[in-house]
Image 1 (cartoon, one colour):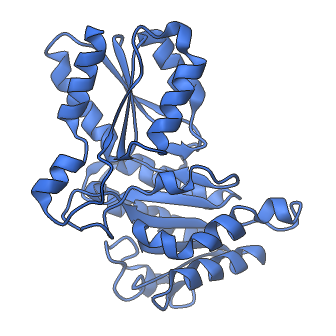
Image 2 (cartoon, rainbow, N blue to C red):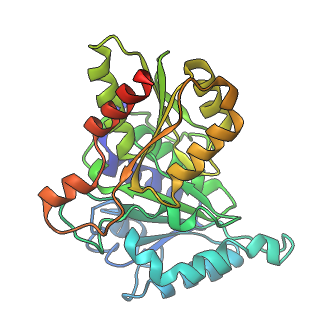
Amino acid sequence: MKRMSFVQALNDALDIMMAEDERVFLLGEDIGHMGGDFGVTRGLFTKYGGERVRDTPLSEAAIIGTAVGAAMVGMRPVPEIMFADFLGTCYDQIVNNAAKMHYMFDGQFKAPIVIRTAAGGGFGGGPHHSQSVEGWFMNVPGLVIVGPSTPQDAKGMLIACIENDNPVLFLEHKALYRVRGDVDEGKFSVPLRKAHIAREGTDVTIVASMKMTHEALAAAEELAAENISVEVVDLRTLRPWDTQTVLESVAKTGRAIVANEAPKMGGLGSDVSATIAEECFSHLKAPVKRVCGLDTPIPFSVPLEKVILPNKDDIKKAVQDTLAH
């Protein structure tokens, strides 16, 4: 294994897949000479040239529209949308073109597209550069949504997504780009639609993803000092998420906390908590609790942003409350 950052792991995955399969190409704003706004594509333009690492105009609709057309004729595009908030400008191409392609053409065409994008808040980026957008797409059949939390999963899941024939929304939380970890060298893949037990426990289950997995693990570590055993489930794939692993964990612990950075209404946390309540009701010793962001746009002010976004202390309180029930 090799120690590398989240960004380096993503870059390594792209390099491996581009070297292996000439159908894989990248397109997006400033991904060429500049290497992307966060450095994920750095060095790939020099290695593979402008035909396969394409700088595009500032038009997300054009980027995803081009990717859809390329996928239809056999290519495997990996477009980058600089900030996840800008997915609103290419929503039609994702939802009404890519996600429906296989169904509309009865399998004659498919859309093996991996849309990489930087999501999440915590850095003072304001309301147009800080949103958690998975909830926008949870209700779209045909679309896979992935949100890794570690460099190992970032590399392995990106490789798995590029090899997958479905359109994938690959969410990269900006707060994780500098996180470092041990990553397997060479080509490997992490299975999609399979959650990971990031920490085993017996008293309560916390279901989380991306940055909230790290917040949950930090909370679990502090709660261990209070003799509270917490199990942390990292979803990894957000749509369709791994119901079996989650329900088995909740059946074991009898209590569940769902942690999601996005606002509570209509998001991933709502779907997970409702499913637990429906499918695991007889095992629950207390109601399912959700720890989510407040229902407000994210401000530029970092102190205000810290109030709006959930953290380990919010998770700790939810665990303590559910154990007191």
